[in-house]
Image (cartoon, rainbow, N blue to C red):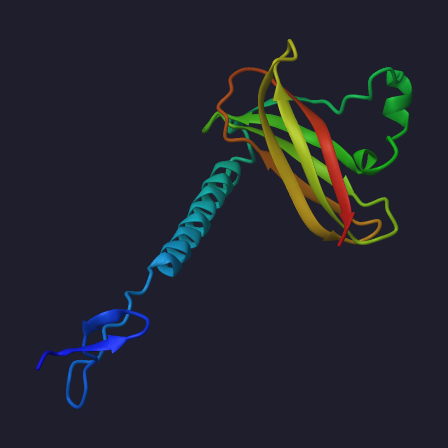
Length: 185
């Protein structure tokens, strides 16, 4: 007698194992979860390495900053069409008025530009900020960009942040705030 029997789903085929036979094989598991997990771990590791490099490059001067960087002018340019005199006396409305560049320099060690940003929350609510800064040369040519971000700034509170670029530049630069995003935290 043959080992085949009728199965409505498979038709005529191999008889199912019975007492003491081999159990049916289970489908192979996918490794997609491992791949996603390792990918996320790699991204987090990369961000940590970039953060450490930025911290090392921007800090740790024992000579009080002498010779560690070349100073450049900090510019917070007024809106187009606004008289310069009024812009210097009065901060713009909205989140743009909450941000002021207090320093602008290129590190002599790395060649990376950095802007010191002072954020003052003039709103009535605790807020989060994302500040976009661009670095330009004397002719206005864009050399790079950077971002500064801070969370949970209380109403009326001041916070100092750095906007550090990883683009190498040479010579004198100017720093300009290009966009400020403020939202309640």
